[in-house]
Amino acid sequence: MGHWLHRNIVEPGKLPLLLALTAFVLTFAITRVVTRMIRAGKGPFGNVSAGGVHIHHVVPGVVLTVLGGFGAVASSRYGFGSGAFAVVFGIGAGLVLDEFALILHLDDVYWTEAGRQSVEVVVLTAALVGLMLAGFSPLGVNGMSDDELHDRGGVISTVAVNFLFALLVLSKGKARMAIFSVVIPLIGLVGAIRLARPGSPWAKRFYRSRPRARARSTLRAYRHDRRWAGPRRRLQDLIGGKPDPAVARR
Image (tube, rainbow, N blue to C red):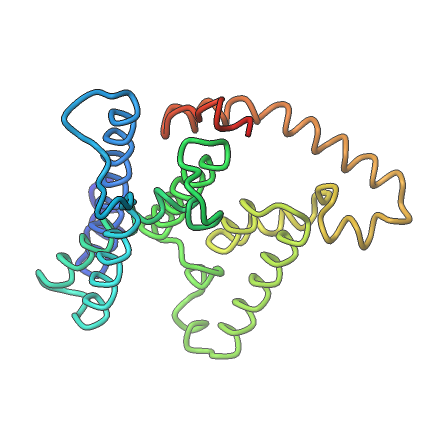
């Protein structure tokens, strides 16, 4: 176990990524604790305003993300500088994605149902970066031997096929599965074989004259959503806090 950790995570080339992920997760967790305390009226924290304008934490997040990103590009993969800029980038990314829903909707939806999108994006981001730290590379290049990696045609064809699988899964209305299939191509293969979700581009194009497939797709989506909607909402509430019902109904 120790050898695997040293080879896949603690090696110098991946240390900045580990630091960035740690800073990202901790920043998101601390930010959610602070905002929930502000919402409950507890603790010494409060909203930051300037000239009557509420300054959302996405603003310093953007600044830190820019500084950390450009600093990481300008520095090498090794040394103190790369680690420091990785931490700065992780902190900035955590602040930005914590208000992803606000950016998406251009409205303060932090404590509404729409605000759940921020929690989902943060969890997806952390999971994808964690998979990359564990040794997975985008579009399946990590599964190739040294000889295959030297073969440019083989690399291009592998990336292209896996990318097409991801697009196919996305066209079937399975966004989360498509995202993970970029890192784990086997997920894309499974998603490509399974039925599309109703209302997806694939279903509209290929199930229009196939009532049986359309009915199976609708029934499977209904059963899936009924089974997982509740646990997913409880997990989001645990991580990010429950939305405000009064605001959610508007």
